[in-house]
View: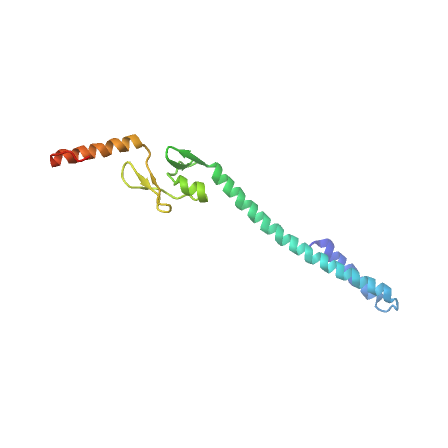
Length: 147
């Protein structure tokens, strides 16, 4: 508790003790009113201290999110961390929910997201060429065109 409030309570107690033998009811009533006002002020201070703790925690959380946001960059087809070069992370999940969801490599041309089920291709031209080459190899092996 704030030292000034503790001192004020001590002063009120002293005043009550001094006025205890007095017949001045107005003075005693004033001291009691002051005591109640001080109790109310103490309760408000305690509420404000709790609010302050909550707000400080939220501020730290937002600062951490901002730091994370500033450390993310979009490259090629996905999201990567600048500081550690971690990734690739799903750009759709990052854009939508600010979640860093690691993409899973399906083959050397495609990645998929286990959360949103998005499919990502870092180099579409290379992937298309590889698909056509695979089809050509299969056609040659089977003896005919099957496009």
